[in-house]
Length: 275
Image 1 (tube, rainbow, N blue to C red):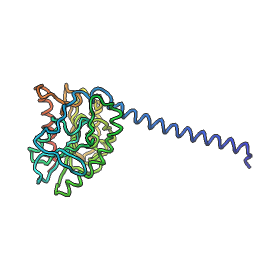
Image 2 (image 1 turned 180 degrees about the horizontal axis):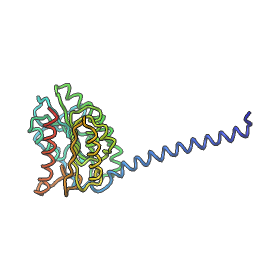
Image 3 (image 1 turned 90 degrees about the vertical axis):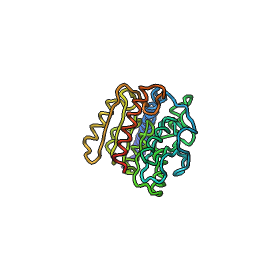
Image 4 (image 1 turned 30 degrees about the horizontal axis):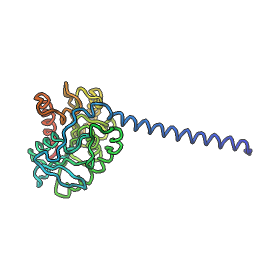
């Protein structure tokens, strides 16, 4: 029979163990969040900010799935493409011009405002902004958009994600919501994500990228090579930096050329798999 003293000692040990477990969990969660914030807090994430313009592009702004979105292309098309922006949002002129280019191939293109009118601005604290605009929320917000597109007769949907948007695009692929995905200079994407993709995926990365460096991109390629049921493609663009496909200067001919090569790769992928 356990005495009062022994019982007290056991209770004390249990309390200490409980507190240790709580502390370990708290520390783990804190470091996970810190890692996530640090991944997006470096200079590359925010370099070359675009001059946002609500009037840019040949399309128009409407509401789809409860979100504002820039749309372009034939509304009666049976094929749709989601362009999921980087942290600068859906009013970036280069992104809207790309939407118009994709629309010219016969797709109905949707560029949602996943940030609810609050895109990242250069003077903003990036970790604070990321906490308010997580990719998990973007994934959930994308579901009603896809549902509405389906209800309007869209038969096949592709998604391209840029930086922040790449994580949303790959989550849509993992969940089986889209027929093809393209990730351009992705952030937040890891090897485990690649293992779970269900749709053909092209990954277009930069040689100079702290978020998806060539070493990580090659790991993605190795994983895809073990998934014969999913067509995959990885390309590393030499000499370019993170964000090159949408944050180029239009007066820089070489930068435009490199961005357009990525755009064509993306469009070729969708032409092959979104049909």
